[in-house]
Figure 1 (cartoon, rainbow, N blue to C red):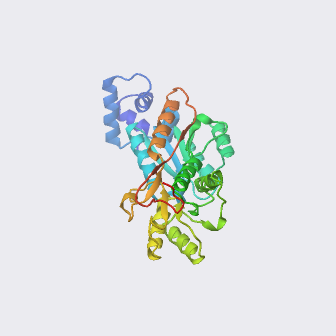
Figure 2: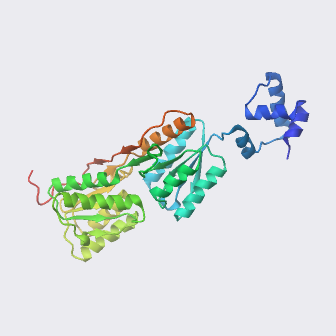
Figure 3: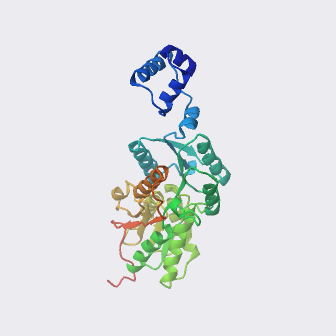
Length: 339
């Protein structure tokens, strides 16, 4: 493999001149620059990226950490798609690293990207706590921004959506339509999003003076078969419910299929709501009502804030995004509707 010294000999310039051309620092005449580039092509020289990053103090790369259990589904497809597109618009490369299955592995993924000299890191944490994220941010010079988690000590470094409030508002709309017996399919409860959406469901019932019936809460794991299994379990147990909220649209789609198999009409007998407003939602039968989370807007804010930090711009305070219930055919009035 060719070295920087060989490039210098072929170009007829000093090693320092080649270094200045590669780093972009210091003046080099156009004639010598052209000779260096011709020598690079002739020798097949490939610069050591890590060495170059150390020299220039910039790699033009941004790291993104997401645990692999979250790779499936439209929500995270949208998150990664827009991250890559927006980074490309900024002339930077996006490096995706797996956070795997624990807080220790999420921490190791962040450190891996920092060791690669990424200019900054974005993490969608599943296992690290807010206190652990605050500590990690405090320990490093490179900016580390956190999506979908509200930090206590570094409010400029977090962009999040109020999952609990969005869930509560969706349930409150069902209550306003006359529903009282509302079933709920949870997401994975080791996920902050799963816990917050369940908390919002409970808070909405309590606010309206409706007792929380634990028998109407069924555990799920974000997949369509969990939605089918939940409805089958509720029916088998003889549970009475006139509405059902699933913690994501995949489970809601599974629930719609199971309700059809049990000849339970939607929304005449059971109204159904999901979360995330996946592209398939308008095309289910009936069309699925869903809480749309502002993923694109959150990514846009995250990347704009990160680039501003790297460019020495003004720090912004934390920003909370809210979901919006998109009402479609799967919502209908309940037995207590007075409208």
